[in-house]
Length: 147
Image (cartoon, rainbow, N blue to C red; front, side):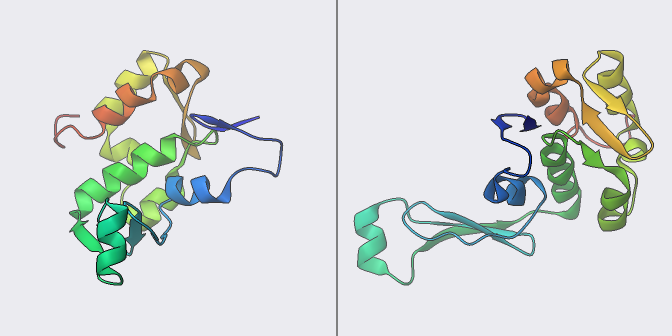
């Protein structure tokens, strides 16, 4: 069964690692070029294995903390990757607004193109939408207030 845009698994055998990314979980990054996420702060290690070894344990090359509006858009984009879609109630609980209200125009357009289906519980990609997830995701990054 498909459980997200680019992954399939037998029932109950979905990758917890991938689901951690798509549900906004925190993760640690070990090794050259590894990325980490904790409490909205993303960081990455130096990419060269030699530099990583030579400077261990001080190997973090950079980090970023996105503004809440960008974090909300990212949460919506990765939530849409899931076969079950973006949970509207959970999104509203975390980000303070139903995604259908926040991106009214963008989601209406995507629904009109047959890319998503909106229910009382979720916003989910259609089978066609799985192939065009990037189009839907990019629309959520548009400046707010146009919908």
